[in-house]
Length: 160
Image 1: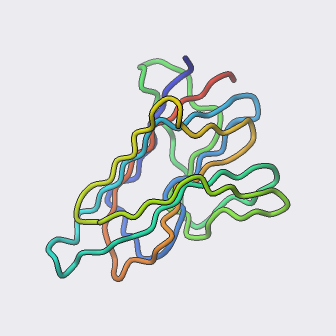
Image 2: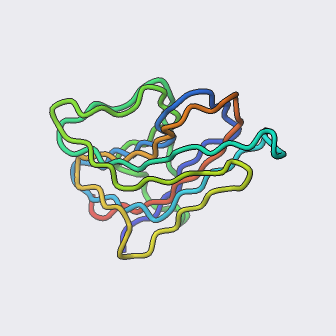
C-alpha cells in the first residue's frame, strides 16, 4: 500500500463550470483515487434545488492543465508521511484540455445539491492515473446562481 492523502477546498463560491479537483500524478508514481465528497451550504428548499452534472476525466499524455483556480497542498493521512510528489489544483475555471494527448471520460453523475455527494470506489473500480497523467472531477453544469461548495478528494500515491 502506498501513501494516502487528502486534498480539500472549503466554502468556495462556485458560479461556473470548472474542474473542482485536478490531480497530476508524479512522473515516478501511480495515483489511485479512493473517494471524493462534495457539499454546499447556501441553497436550501425546493425552490433552490438544482441537479448538476459531474464527470471524472483522465488526461493521458500531453494534456493542458486547467487554470483559474488554486494549488492545494495535500495532507498525508499518516502523520509524518512525506509530501505528495505530484500536484493538486482546485476550482480551475478553465478546465483540463486534450492538447496533443487524450481525455478519457470515466464517469458521469448527476448531483442533487440539496444533499451531500460521496463517491467511494470499491478497490476494483478505483481510477488509476499513470505517472505523469492527470485526473479531474469536473462540474459540467453551470449553477443557476452562486453556490458555496466544499469538497474533499482522498487518493493514494504508489511509488515515488
